[in-house]
Image (cartoon, rainbow, N blue to C red; front, side, top):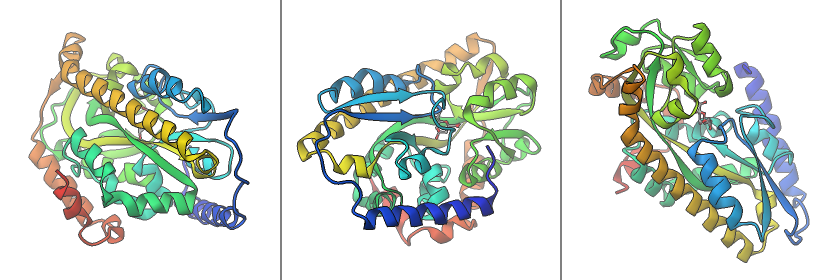
Length: 335
Ligand code: KDO
């Protein structure tokens, strides 16, 4: 799926206008939420730690309030179309990202910047702080999407089918690096020094196998879960993004639950996010040895060189123009 920027802008305008109309119409009448089915669509595999946390923790915790119905491997909606589906009332939940939100609300782009968040703990505290109140409210008011919890995906690493040693961003020149298909992701791929190519998550394995791309970037748990190590030769530990997803629910559906039901859903979202976070962190600690046993080279490049280049690219970018003054400092000040 590759949207031209002009098509995206048209879509964005139509989407925001449509939601505004629905909001003005007062949405759906309040009613008991009994018998509500919460369909979630995600490109994640069912064995990914975020998926396991939702099926093993979230679903049973909310069973007296609503029925959780996950659709993995993008089998219900293509990656990147879930927010529009929620806004149009065709889907209740998704695992979204700042990169997807930024495609519709530019102020979200600050949370797509490489080398911004320090680690999983910082990510969790930033989400829980008031630092994100403004952008969260924009998602609710403009898209009709409420963000329930932040899900730790892991530190994104460069994963290549080529053998050339990578020390600095200059060594990435010319490499066809698959990135997810939004503008913010493509910018990150370019900031790393590569030639970014947009491709859906579910198409990565075959693209690596055929050589259509030279590599991809994802956290170590994803490289294991999706078996990308079978069709790649090295993992370059750039740790260029402490990656995060947000468990998202339709605001209209959320507002139909009673406060007590909302509290059950919120606690289930927090508990499943924490379970997934701990599992991802444990995997990150052990997977380097696993990939080396599988014959991949796994090593740390000149991370400072990558950090300096990526941060300079963002600071000079058009994205930075949308960032509220002082927000970077407020994010860094969260401890
Ligand atoms: C990906 O497409 O590389 C990505 O990691 C982007 C994330 O935001 C998220 O969409 C993720 O895919 C999917 O959940 C599959 O793990």
